[in-house]
Image (tube, rainbow, N blue to C red):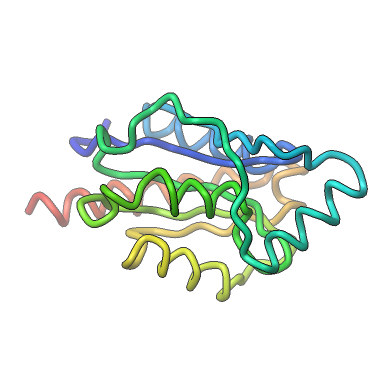
Length: 169
């Protein structure tokens, strides 16, 4: 367990990002919180609308979170990548829920996507948190589907623990 109090928050439309989030939270021994998009993103039209909303960097309506981010030192944020961007639900969470505490927190980013590098999404995340994440992780959808993402997640969690050790030394 880390001295730092982490929270893993994530949005997942199909369950890929949820599986990675659950593994990270389990390894960190911390709380897990789902970001719930109140807009229906199911089916073909939901999928197409989600991609468009992501591409145009739209916000959406999300359910008020159960966890107050101000109670945590590290917020580990998980998102699928849609049209090269973070999802509207995660954008809304970072824009509406955490801005008043953003400067006092450390953030980490993990994302699931069809291709490994997502520089536009990472840059956008850094803009929203007004800094750089202490660690970031990219997991390919095919690795989630095949269950072959454990070594990547373990390395990510070790990077989070290392960032805590550097902070306390």
